[in-house]
Length: 416
Ligand code: DSN
Image (tube, rainbow, N blue to C red):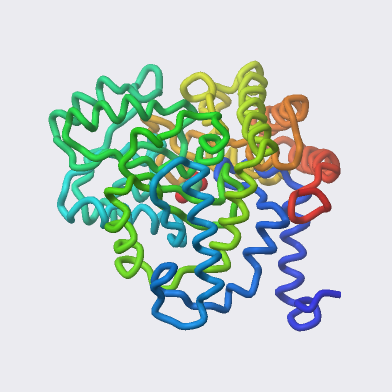
């Protein structure tokens, strides 16, 4: 019996239930993943007890000799993994990384371009209900209405017109490759800095499965828990030029004490992401997404932009006559966990949405491949085409649980 279950059976039971849920369902939220047992162990370590305001060698509290070693290891690994001159591993989340990135590079009221939230952007890329949209003059760009892909020529025209100080590239629901080199050209011509938020595709970039923003971005932000498979948290990578401003913007600008236990998990994850096994894993994520996309399309589901180049798919649920919300809820009842999303030029509200976002990082972490993706697609199609069908969800849920259980969940079952 664990210490927790003896001392606090209520919370222990909730955690146990969550373990079962994670094992028995198919986790297809594109931004979620399973951290390895080593990452979980580091994140749950005694570093949770320590305060360390400041940076290695310059802390505001005593007793940080091991914190310094830890943070330096995380910084060195991050710099090596992504080939950038400077890394700040302290942001507690992607939103905080983005806030610090803005604080370091622009002033309130400055013009910034970012992709519209309802076309695949992020809250912190200028949504009016977020600090970003309230503090800065965000001018949203869009995807092309026909291709549903980014149109750099249109973005260039817009940038030359509105003259932003900063252009943000990198998205939460965009299934295609991003041309960071092209964005850099646009930014240069418009006299803007280029910020890349690579949260969704950081693991793919680390593994060479997507163009790296390394040679093009002035500042790169990311979360560490998506395709990168680390603990929940954020990070900023920069050229030397922005190093000092970014460090100041993180601490004391926007955060207090860094979460050293999470930094421990980040360091472990960066180490894992530098291995040949991770490279193979990232390739498999992309192959699985392509296999899933093919099977869903063959079954009559329309995919935004006609497919995927990365780890995620955005399905247009109008093609099966239901909303994204209805699709998400029906699939949840069948043990398939996804999230509703708007699609470009959606006519439904963001809370209902016409889209369904699906990702393969977590299933790939369980060792599933293209054959499994075909089975998963068949279940998804069955549920979406008959979301209220008598017993459909219950039947699929049982089949899914039986199918999923033998695929080990890193950090929960024996596999890693
Ligand atoms: N919530 C994340 C996602 O799902 O993409 C973005 O912050």
